[in-house]
Image 1 (cartoon, helix red, strand yellow):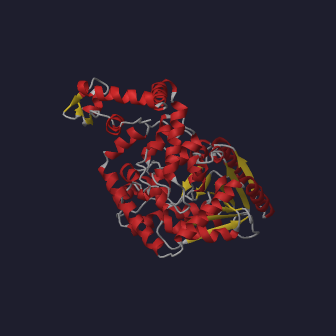
Image 2 (cartoon, rainbow, N blue to C red):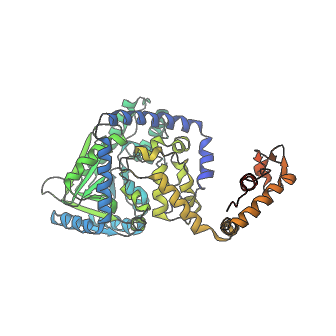
Image 3 (cartoon, one colour):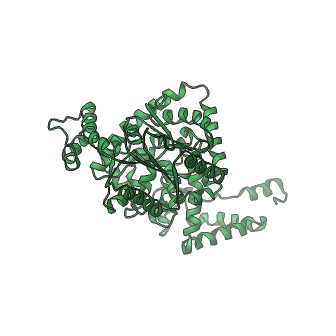
Length: 483
């Protein structure tokens, strides 16, 4: 991943700043609770939800275990259908491929379908540097782009904004880049949506090149699938002459039939709907119908590193539903910007450090951005055990960054191992602890200790060692060897 967010403070400092924003907390609490309740209702309607969840996890795990085979099969199918596959090892290579493809058309602008992969690689910025305008067409992404902001949620990037803020953004910014918002615009949702439609219509009708991501890529047929709620994706996928899709290599599923599982899991987990309003699928090029030039950029960008981790690879099962964000007590109070990643919330806390590594203060803090309550695992439609991953990554962070700070703990653990490894040494240590009661004990608790230990005893009472150990009591009452 790129360094877009790396200039910000680590999660503890960023979260503290966000917690001071009461409007943000109100917006998030209202939005996430609404989505949570809708999801619960539609999930409860299915008697086989647990089986669907297991099936989704099994399909994804199987695909990841055989990813090389399915990637080659997908490339063959896309090529046979008239498309072109490009392979990108990292963000720089993916951006270079897309920029070159757009330049080859002679166009200076593109319309975009909402895509986490293109956010991940900073494609918009790369296109801008090349003199190419990239217009977001998803309503929430449009709000973020016009507001010179960054996304804060996987599904609803502008979840941190309320209607009044959106109205102000539309009135101030739309006219600078296209059709302006009406002068009498109100914050009614219907009026805001109407203003967005009017603003985007000219861009849809004018654009010759579109850029998309994909929710799923089917290896069997070479098909791509985009699910959405507004219809903007359908406009981008059908009207332009050239379509470029940037797809993470983990988005593959083996067969067309597998979509039956995921098209039940995804809408219920993401928007709380039984099915999404628009499901667009396309396979290669069809003469006289839709884009006549189709390119797929298969993106690695750290995914094979995650795949190599037997525990961490399950994060690649993610289908970007955002259910884990909507139940996370940490995310609900801090919002997505505090995570310093395009992937916020619990899934971001385990996915981003694997994609970017843990060299920066931002990334090595992410596995600690959780209470480990387990709610994220309970709602994940593909059963990613995020709490286990968080603990796993915390261990990795400690091992990678221990340095001299780990030496005192290593010495302490070695000493504990030496004492606990022999019953006589343990008995001696227990006797010393009992004798110390005369020095540090006070009414059954440890009194004030010198710094830095006083930081602990100033805030709480610590029990003083017992006057007699169990071992001593046993020997005195039973008269036998306690070993």
